Length: 304
View 1 (cartoon, helix red, strand yellow):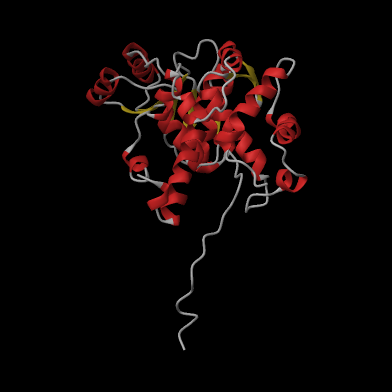
View 2 (cartoon, rainbow, N blue to C red; view 1 turned 90 degrees about the horizontal axis):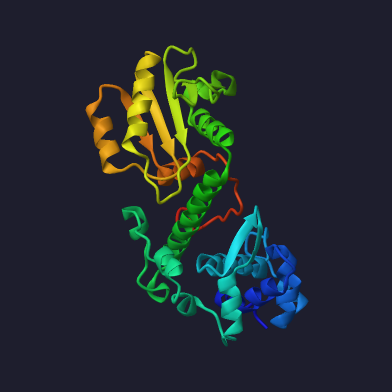
């Protein structure tokens, strides 16, 4: 039989996680879920076009993501997860099937699915996959995957230690070309007595100018208080600096943005969404999973 779609995998996946003794991970469930779905060895080992992952493993991961967004599973550590009390309650109801329509009864899932999109994302939001061209479907899928990756990056950064997060920001700025892209052009200042500054990076290779950095981890729903931005700008004055970057995993309220617009210092505010976008663009904290080449007919070749 063909490998079932990710929604058909949701219920068997949840059952097996519920049977596990504590936490588990997707790879450990492949054989068990495959047996429940009566998949053949050929089904389980079928590869995606890139050849780097099996189709079944890919769909298990997607099923896990959706079920977790509904609060039926929870992460315990990197790559590991376990069933929640809500997940056990769902199993106790003995549903015939769990799919996106079923998961829509949970507000967290609905909020996640209906979260506001950027104009760029809306441009690839399709009315129907059946009416979309293959190129449009690829673009839409890429947008969804990138959005998932961005959200995962923000979650990981929020859970990281302050010192790790500060180093990440410096790594990103170096990756963006500050200090000539040379790691030795940076130095971390995240220590007691840093006067409100987490890092400093040379803006050019000769070190003729520097950019001071403040990095704050806040939960995605908690905006950065304007006083934090005000204190950072005051710290720039103490260092006789004219340029600064304030980075957070959450967002800046309008009051903070308006305050920055009124000061003479050149201060850039980077929120969680923009931070994740820059990390993906400059390959900081991410790696290439799959590569696809989209080819078309070479019209010049067929000219006689």
